[in-house]
Amino acid sequence: MDPLTIGRKVARLRKEQGLTTTQLARQVGLSQPQISRLENGHQGFRSATLQRIADALGVPSAYFFEEDAALVEAAQKRRRARRRELGRDLARDIELQYGTVAVTPGYQAMLRRLTAALAKPQTDPRTLRRLVDRILSLSNEERTELLKRLSRK
Image (cartoon, rainbow, N blue to C red):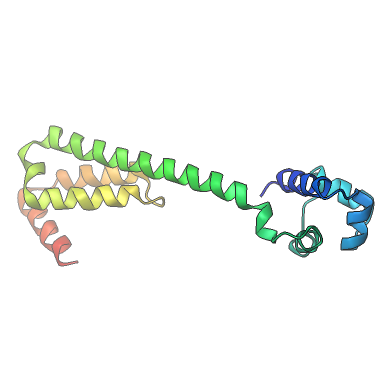
């Protein structure tokens, strides 16, 4: 978390409550220059210090992270949507490139699994693409054996 963002929230809340930096400093056991450095992002927050400031201002310490949590969640949603889109594109490319091989029920099930894997944040799309290319380069017998093994899982 960016110290400046937290500091600005502290300053805004302090001003809304009509407190000076000196008054807040006394309540939390810090000096006025320390409060000023914290509010201006020139000094990072220790968790204990942030908790004392939150208590003095009458808010939960999570208050200082809420807005950023919403931004993070929105970014994660966009990344998941993009990964799902990549998965659909990958499945379509495979069907176009490999024709009937990719449209059999077994391969469609495998494509659904690969698309689901691609939607996970920890999956690297390039690695997945190489894996798909490798699978599709196998002989029919090897692919059939692979499908059998995958269907057992």
